[in-house]
Image 1 (cartoon, rainbow, N blue to C red):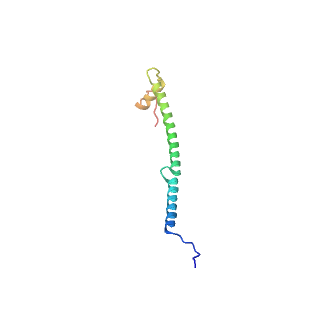
Image 2: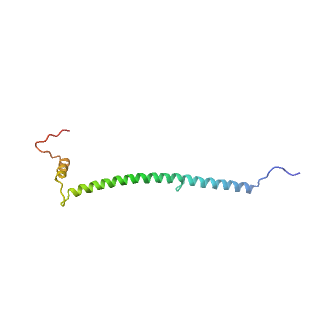
Image 3: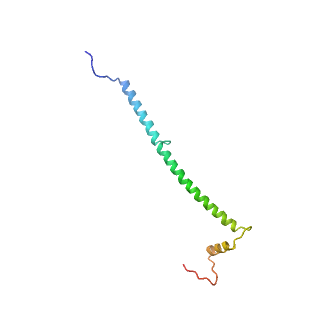
Amino acid sequence: MTQSGIRFSIGGILYLALAFTLGAYFTFAAVQGDYGVFRQVQIRAEAETLRVERDRLYEDLLEMTNLTTRLSDRYLDIDLLDERVRDVLGYVRADEIVIR
């Protein structure tokens, strides 16, 4: 008599186990690896944050450039100079009252 059941050889079982293990590893690496989907989302979010900071720093640079130009020898803004002297050095005219 012959057996009616299916017999798996050890080599076939090892082959299936190896294929499953490699598939699981590559799937994990594609999702959570160094170049995986989650890392790409994280990199995009970080890039957007850095773009916002870059734009803010550029606006600060433009403001400082404007103030520097207005206080330069070529173009001296007396009102700005007066404002900066009062702010930095704490000067007050005799006819002014300071409220803090």
